[in-house]
Amino acid sequence: MDWFSCEGAHALKLRIEQYWRERGYEVTILLRDAGFHSAMRSARFDLRSDLVNGLPRRRRREDCENADTHVVTQRERAVSPEDLRRRACELADTARYNHWEEIGAALEADGVNLAGEKLGADAVLRRMLNARCAISRSRKD
Image (cartoon, rainbow, N blue to C red; front, side):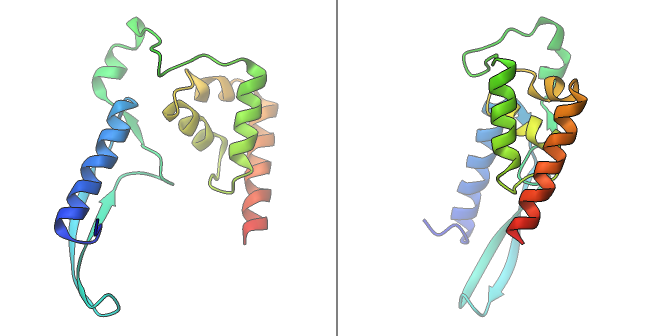
């Protein structure tokens, strides 16, 4: 599919919104007519979103309002502290993240229940993840 055409960009927009909706996040994706692009020798459409480093900024309102009655679903799962630490370190080493909070959001988007809160509670782990993020990004450059 041509993701730069109007139809392709719209399909991609719907796909991204559905992906994050299924994980309990609200994202805003806008289509933008970028006009004719000489290198592509055609018109193109771009997507603009409120994602930050590829991660959503906010949960759906109804998810936040029902947080006190929240039941862990099959998609959300609790992991042991060792597994959480291991997975967080693996993500920090990918050079895709700048801060431990982004890693927590990525783990929550992947279904790890309360990952951001658990990472936030461990000051030593937070410092280590931030350092690993910085090191992996410097190696990437």
